[in-house]
Image (tube, rainbow, N blue to C red; front, side, top):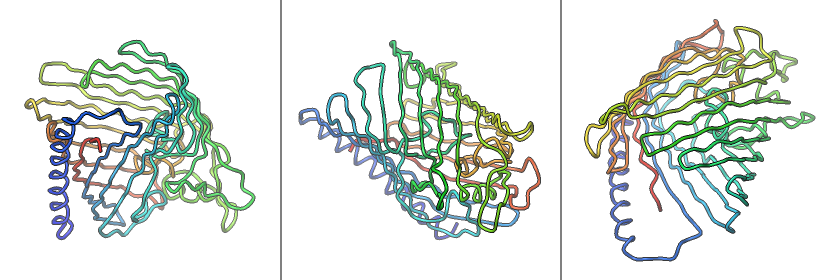
Length: 378
């Protein structure tokens, strides 16, 4: 990558040094006892170098992310949750899609008020992260203005319950992209959730849910046309989806020790759009791999996966960072986890081909080198 490679190397050194310094200072600070604080904050940084190409376009860029998680306890039952991210990009690109432009920006992963008067009930409102109820096949790691009710029953290592939500699907800038006279869009959903966690290396999470998009605006349809959906043009400036989006989704994530020095890691997702015809309505993703405990302070993970996303299984504008639609392909990733130092470093390769021939989509190949720290308390 030339200059980008030097920049990547220097920032890697800074990140690792800052992480180590933060651990030392946190140990020193722990000696001084203090009263419990109503405010808590954590930070994480990641740096990646990406080489992307398809039949018509090429891109090389460095992406730096700073993620923050902050909570403030207003009362024992009322909590404010604020999670911003700073995203900085540098490099060159010859392609721009509607979901992830080459630009520096600040985005919200979550900004919400959570009211939990009992252990089994909670209500949240604000900009809510959609991955709490949905799989990556349906929506990216993105926040929508929403209201959510959760009812969870917990018993030691187990938790099971239901989440119900009404949201306004928006871009990363929280804009609904509506024009004059267009009604407000909505995403209504409900999900059953089950989780079990014995320790850091033994955990299972499963979910099954229902979703329904309504009144998606013309601007979203226009951008989704470039990303794989079937869209019709009503006029020079008006577009609409050929089919509505309403159906079922399910997800499974697990990590289980098989031997003393080896854990199996896997995840699977499935999505079905009831409103699209057969052959255009289903999406699935499967990943399987292992986590090798090389030493007390070092792990090595290897994982491979396959995905297939039909043209009208999901709204392409909202899942473009993960899959897009009209795509079938595979991915391979490998990371070294430095547990004591608090970061991981590895490589991700993705090859994505087309399910159906398209005049605006092409086969994509992406190679990513990535360093990411663990969340650390501020």
